[in-house]
Length: 379
Image (cartoon, rainbow, N blue to C red; front, top):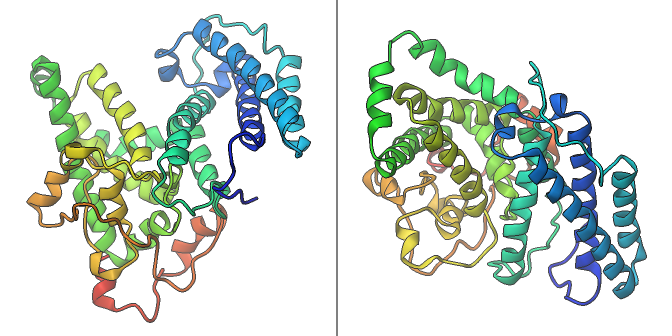
């Protein structure tokens, strides 16, 4: 399915897709209430309350039905509204208006369906309107040819949050767990919150910078990281396209300073929330340049240059948060008002779909025979 960005307001198409989106999320939300021990994340449940989620669920059911009715009235494509109504009906049938928000027992193993639903809902509410009203590439389809692939990456990384959390923390705990770091932790947590938060952002970004840069300069590691660079359609979902080996190595390295220095729980939570939103922002298809803030924090323009398809701009902008880190190490590039013409890879062939992309780095090196070796090593 490919829906062009030329879809206009008042045709009922947008409201139809909104009704389907909300209908699917509400159905998944009911499953979370039915099977909370298996489908929700204990740490994340401490952030929200069952009552607040019940209220959000009911509100989304009502909104989905209203958008479905609006779409049915405005659009000639009745199928969209009927699908939305179908999901809402299923949600109500499973008790959507009468879910139990009581306390939940912890379980040894669980999926992060609640994390998936809430993050997908919030990111879509924030970034889809931004991309529709302030797009950088106006001719880019709203649902490009690989949007399903990116959504699948997004879904898997959220559902298996427990698995990724465990394996990415193992290296830090294995190598630094017996060093007796209590005094360091006490000192860090005694710092003013603003200082502690900046230190967390800065030191993790330095670790991420060098990990990221090594992925670009080491041929074997580039096999995995090339998956992330394979999209030619930069949008709010594009950042999710990351190979699980890439996720494991990068997050493991970033977790080391967080573990060794022992930042407070609130600092860690703010860091996680900020990174979740910011990672989506820097890949978004938006022309908003953020004024002087683009010299302080990484922005879409800054990160899009990192994804530039033109070899002469390879090896730039590795930092995730602070551009000045690239300035320090000589990899900064941000022309005043210019954006890259194209993003993606020069490779003549790259597999489509989640499964093929997951297997590809283990079987072949993503190299185009016409691509100069020196340019490739600078990628």
